[in-house]
Image (cartoon, each protein chain N blue to C red):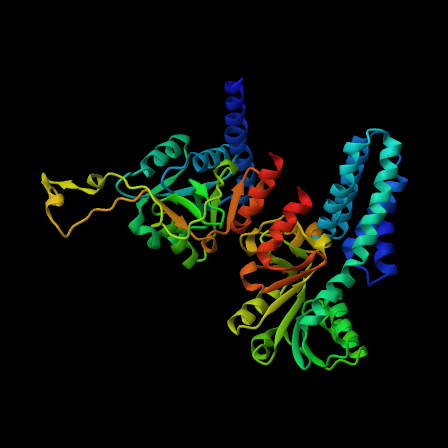
Length: 225
Length: 299
């Protein structure tokens, strides 16, 4: 009984939602677009592959960042589909942005005050995109909407293993004994929050909404339940 | 066909009525005369009628008014499975909807005219019946104000606006579209109408509105938009390019032209960041509140 419930929830809120989001997103992708994506979001990958299958002509710029290098997975999936991609690190973003027509970001959560919690680096991309007047679209299923409120990335975040930041080049590891250096701390954050002013549009399974309408959706959802 | 004839006659008979209202009145008439046998058939016929109307007048208001009418009455079809019963309910609801929206312009005017202070200098764009009603109400409330109106080429609609205002004894000056940047430092507030209000809280209006909004923002002047609620439409443009072509050009241009890129667009999109407040019959809204209202209207 409980298993059926869970399966139904997964089917509706996750799989069908992805299809609905892909349908809305398809309208926003035009022929000749240059789309920038960051990291690895299964939803954004699904949208891009679906749009490509339906015949839209576009190319993708995959932005990646250390230490997780999740963009490689995105690159693998898109190239396998046949989509022409460019791969850059996040440091080159302001160089690439003048040729980009839109930015697609995934989200880990959408907070009640309209802030988007995503992989660390996403808010940087949104900031630079805003400076270049490039529209930023966030794709997010409604189950990721949460009632928490956060205005900056420090008040609550996850810390990842600081040793991941250490780089070994040509057999030399500069930071090998960083713990012994009293004045040095390595900080490896996992998430960051993007303010709603940098996000132009949120595509959800309920439709396309502006970032500030998240509390309305939460209210509607609570009424439904 | 007779549908189109009725629509055109409605538009001619009363030039004061918005094209969206005329479209809804036409659809209601169509509903009354429809001889469909099933509810599904009725819905299909209505959708076809809306398509035909948009092919005659491709403005945003006709499209949004039609869609809202369809939603407003189709909720009835869920409750009454019997066709004749359902049709009666639909017609009653349709009349109610029509009555509500004919009063909406007055409601908007009542809300907005209080924002016009005595001695104000107002800048407006092109010809808008809603803005005219607002200014009428303000003049009736014994407020003294002067108005600058942009000429608004290519159809010089601003001339109509200036003539109408002169009849109200309001001091009015007609300015070139290019003179907007020059004039905006003198004005206290900017009021424009809207052909459509989109989900983001931005507006679609006669070409030149976006420039006006950018100039007002640069000079920190409040930019107000006035629109009735039937103009709310389920579009979410990201930029000027993203607005569908069927709204940008007149219906005849769409049919005749070979290369749309050579035609001049008739409308533009003003993003919500440039709009201070929106006056609608649902109340005075900030651009971010528009999406909340749309969710309530459509869900």
